[in-house]
Amino acid sequence: MPRRPNSSRQTRALLGTFLEQSGTWRHGYDLSKETGLRSGTLYPLLMRLSEQGLLEQRWQEAERPGLPPRHVYRLTAAGLALAREQELAAVAAERAGVLA
Amino acid sequence: MKTGRWRQWAAKLAQHSAGVMPGARSPWAEAMRRELDYICDDPAALRWALGCVLASYRTRLAYWSSFSFRITWRYAATSGVLMLLIGLALQDHAGGQTQPPRPALDATVCDPLGVLPENHPGLRCCTAGGRRNVDAPDRREFHQPSAGTQPIVPRLDCADPLTPQISDTMRGR
Image (cartoon, rainbow over all chains, first blue to last red; front, top):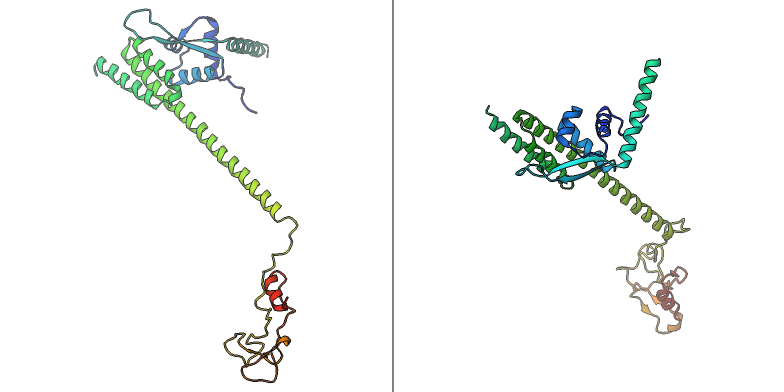
């Protein structure tokens, strides 16, 4: 049976992090610290989610002078829906595990 | 190792990862590289840069595999379509033909003048050089050079219908 897309532990962790502050633009390094994912894992995930239309990105000017603009990310409506769906599924699975 | 050197290595690695990343993904490589400027801790910056290199190679490999799959698929599809077209064209061209094509002139059998050596061993050089019977030219007979008793009568029954010029000439039309 083929695995559902975007159902890996890393992807779920990333989507969950985005969902905590939905609508907020997030930096790559902050996401890495929050999810515990290294850049080698995080950026391929971000690229894939972006290709699937689940994530939007833009360049944000630096708050402090002398620093370059940063790439920032946030979930699209489709991405938010997927993140909520996965969260509900995770909660349901947790409850089922407790009941069993 | 001094901390400044770690930062230099990190910058070099990030630059390398930007070179490895496929062209279409260069904004992502730039995004990873610029994050380095926001990481104050040098060892953390080096770890970040190593991750950038890993991400770039992963992306590159994925890009190659998808690219080669596309190319292979295109080659296979094009070859298949061409073979199908060639097969259909051959089938149309050979429509209903069940026997091999007949040769235009069966030279081994047809001997209209009856001068082949196997038919007339007395003749030499296999030419139709016999003298016409001048006494009766309308009889279309030839005298054998060896002055034999049998005149050479052209055999007109084996003239090939596919070569009407020869047949007409031989029939005197």
